[in-house]
Image (cartoon, rainbow, N blue to C red; front, side, top):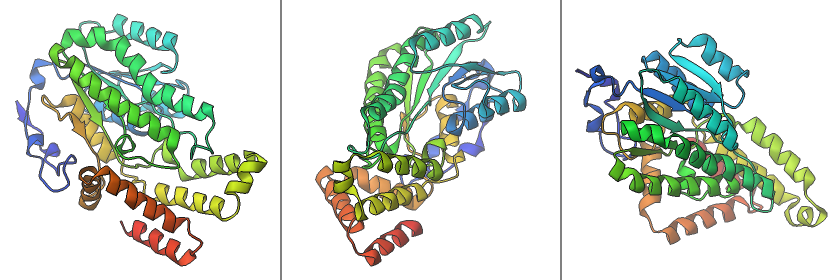
Length: 340
């Protein structure tokens, strides 16, 4: 047995306390926690980074990609060991998920499936009137129903090992993030699904872990892509909406989008650390909340404990000030957020 000192760190579930549980005994010699890991959404971002991390630590990994000939998949195939296998899966297609399940089942050999990590995600749309029904459907189909499809498909294998399911949800599943409405709606639903699943599978000995990161810089939050999509959406508005939302409102909307995205943290290793803990620790937390620093954790903690009515009031005040015509007020808000 050995102690992994790399996991002795500040607790990302709580803003103020040391996470003593990260300093705990592993039982890798039994081979149980070295069981196969099945990851979705490994084209880029958290999934891609986690696949590389687990492979480097000696785990066997099935890494699924939407684009198996894309850059992310090629990086995994060329840069990782033969313990990692890349396969195609589209979480929005029942047949694709079933095909991936059959592949895993047939290629387990003497190993067992220990963990499924639901990571595939999409971010489309903006405010309600700036989002099409397709934006809402796509976000829900990937960020919620994709998790449901994969979970239902792989539960038979997890019940054999009493393994675990790790769902990457979001802080947006706890806090309502306006102007990213389709994404926020889907993540609220994903958190609800994860909570229900955890309670339902408790009697079967299967752990369910939720990873709820704040904004991190991935393909979903790339400022250039989001800005380009917003410009296209503004151009496509009908005459009535252009009259309602044109001029200063459109400018302020672009500014608030940039403000949110400027807050995205580039250190995705913070999230990958918690993901590694979730799939490898014998007794992981049921929820991990990756935050960039103590101040960020403290602010999120305050957001969790204050009454919902107060939270809404603060958000209303923020947006009323930000959408005011006073450039000075807007500049002050931007400076405050930038300092954070």
